[in-house]
Length: 113
Length: 113
Image (cartoon, rainbow over all chains, first blue to last red; front, side, top):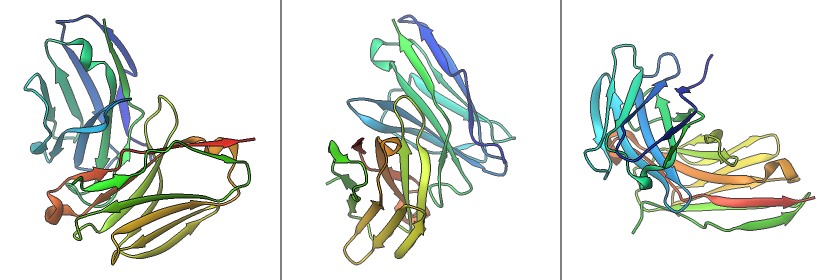
């Protein structure tokens, strides 16, 4: 069974630009969560989608948004990039919303210059 | 008080040592308990998971859950240099825990050859 995949794996952007990250969950998983990971802050929860609906949202500004498609694939968008947005963005999928076991993708490393 | 507390370390042990990693939590509604291993600049990899209380063993790894004490542990026997990584504990409980996964901050482990 294929794992969680994320594209692209690496991105370099400049301040003010926007970026879209993509995540394909494990087949059959309907919940997709996004996390930001930085050395100083650890794993920070961004939001979670289940069956195309945002079920939970972390404490991030509105520049961070996401969506989920009918095939459970998800995208995350960050607009007006800031230097502090440089991080590893992780996608994780599970069968249930906030329950069971979560599996992570390899992450997208975003660098904002 | 954080939902999940984990000693960040760093922890440094000689090869062959037994390693004990621990997390405490505050919400008695957690039902699923997970341990992830994360190598530098990679996504977290699910190492062990346990449902409710009890022990689970997989090769050199043993996961323990003590729900009465709200305490979980991961033991690594005969530690190897390849075990050098950050170990994250995580837990979930579905609706009763806000439909979210909760993570510790991670413990950095170095196994010295």
